[in-house]
Image (cartoon, rainbow, N blue to C red; front, side, top):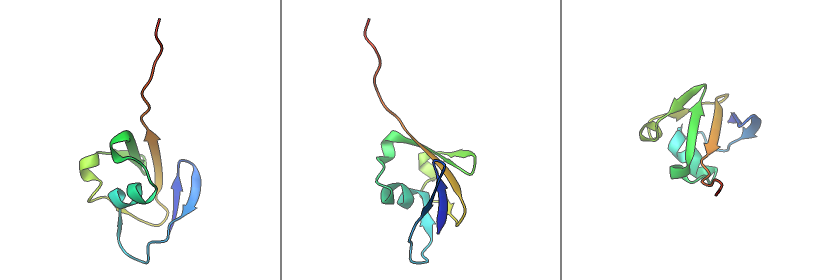
Length: 72
């Protein structure tokens, strides 16, 4: 399966099984509680990752939340 992830084409081997967003996030080794995911232009709520099917050709933007700031 070919996916566009953060602007890069990536090939995901999934043995022809149905792939859900939750599994893809784990497969890509992201920390689920620290990312926001946009699938084909729509932000997907983490509660819906388990039911959001990933298809060949889908486009994802995965943004990692990073804490920090500056002290004055």
